[in-house]
Image 1 (cartoon, one colour):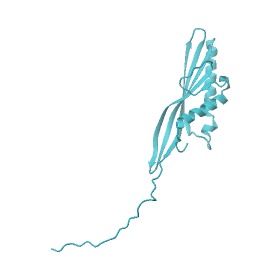
Image 2 (image 1 turned 60 degrees about the horizontal axis):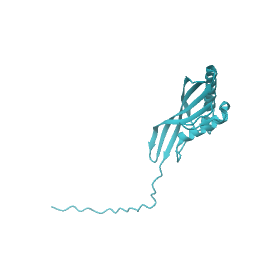
Image 3 (image 1 turned 90 degrees about the horizontal axis):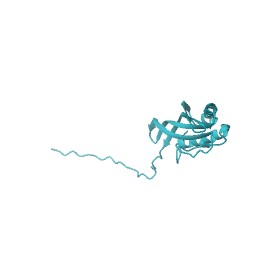
Image 4 (image 1 turned 45 degrees about the vertical axis):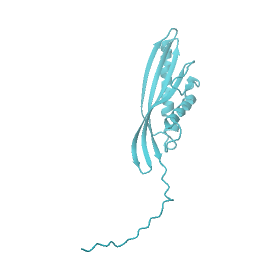
Length: 177
């Protein structure tokens, strides 16, 4: 990614792209992919996608341009529920694999030409299960550490209206004693 966008920024843009990719490529969730931290999920399985952390480290600075290496944590929460606990767990694991493959194989992100991300620096998956009255809920949190470059270019000042300076040498007289 090059010049930083106007608006919410690359993190939000990457999150929105992930929502579209997962909606298209993880068929088992039937389009139930949401880009919000809190979403009223009425039907499962479902995916919640959000970017919650971003760190910019300067790589070069000088003149009218600042370049940063950005590492952003993108979270995909996998929500499943089934009357039989084992089926809920198996479904959650299957969806986790589909999510990882959809993101890590996305040419929109990682292609040598046209990809917007440099690399994925790591993936962490955590699962949890809770027995409800009539079903077992199994959830997974998949964290992707995504890396890209951002460049902020400041406008150079307009120097066309500067006055022309003229220097005239003059002899300096030294007073006599």
